[in-house]
Structures are given as C-alpha cells and as structure tokens.
Length: 289
Image (cartoon, rainbow, N blue to C red; front, side, top):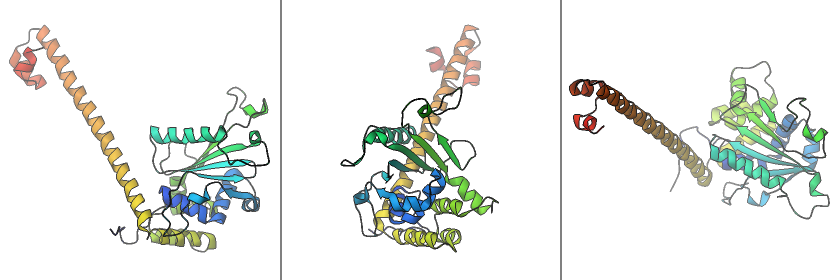
C-alpha cells in the first residue's frame, strides 16, 4: 500500500528512524553538532568518530533493517544519542535504563584499553522542552554544597546528560535571533517538517543542503513514512488516553462531591426534593446514602 504525506511535507528528523538514518549518513553534520555541544574540535571528532551500531542503520531508501539506539565512540568517549519527540515516564525510564546498561559495560568487546577509562555521555535532542529556557541543559554529579564534580574527589567516570532544546533553536531561526549561527540552524533543521523550511534553513551551507536533500529523499520511502505516521498515531492515542483518564477522574470527583453534599444535607434533615435539585442525584440514589 502506498503511503502518502501531505503536499510538500517531509518526515522530520524528530522521527526516530529518520533521526538515526540522517546522523549515520551525514558524518560531518553530526560532527559539527557534537563539536558545539561537547566543545570538542570538529576535525578531532571526524578523525576518531566510530558508529557502534552501523550494521543496523538505514542509509538508503530501500533499506528496511531495524534501527536501534544510536551510539558513537570518540576514542574513550562513548555517546548515546536520543531523539525525544515527546516525553513520558516510559521514555525517560527507557533512556535511563539504556544509559545504565552502557555504564555497566555495554560497549564493543575487543578494545585495547581498559573499559573503566570510558566516559559515557547521553545527548537528548528534545522537541518538547521540560527545563529552563536554555538551548542546552547539562546534568552531572556534583557536590550540592560546593558544586564540585564528584570526579574531582574520587576516581569516577560519572555520566553526563545533555538536553538540547530543538524548539528553541527553531524559534531562534524564525525570529532571526542575534545569536543565530550555523549550529542553531543545524538544530532547527531537525524539527523542520516541510520542504520549504528545509530549503530555507539549509540554503548556502553545503553540508546542511546535503542533509536536507537526504531528508527529502528518505521521506519518499514507505518504511520511513509508515513509521513516522505510526509515531504520530501513537502520540495521538496517548493524548486521547490521558484526556479520557483526566475526564474520568474529573467526573468521578464531581459525582463524589455530589454524594458527600447529599449526605450532609440528609443529616440536616433537608427535604429530599431540595437535595435532588441541588445535587442532581435521583431520589433512589439519595435514599441509599
């Protein structure tokens, strides 16, 4: 069955499959993003970056292999890259569990260095923002009193978690923010969901133009489109379930309030007809209280 998007629409990089496909196919794009987030020289990243799970990536339109979480190594730095199009308790727990697995030694075997020397970083690219109004928020283990890192006291390679605010980058691009630069455009490109935005954001930058073309190309693939549509439907269903749960709880709360009110009115010997009018409960319901 042919799966169609709206005219001019593309599958954004916020879609899980597109995210991993683009980052694995566009090494220079990824290297520049990592350089800006981690403050590491871009050329150093390009020379040393190794994908840990390239065998499961989607690098062509016809590829339909399963894509797992994206992990890259830069020498003794292991980076877990996560795209969070939305947030739920389940997604947060999944990200935390994955980070814990990596910390526990879920790295490629056969390396010629001690695994205890590996520093693990998780970078979350967030479409929905839950923190202060910053482009990048960093979480790490520090002494609450002195703000010193735990690793400055003991020999410990504690993980560092980054959250990158994609929505803020997108707004900064469209508002022509004075701090607008290539890095912010690279982030804004991730959230663009139509060809017009892709072309505007990437214009004049060969690397980003290549990424925009790849997004457009992969958006024609039924597997990529189908997964994106499923993500959208799953999110819609989650929102409906949440709304229904809230409404059910609200309705139950209102009904309970009516019952409590009716009980108090009965205790005060208020006539039944008046209780019915005030609470909207039936005579039979009130008599059973």
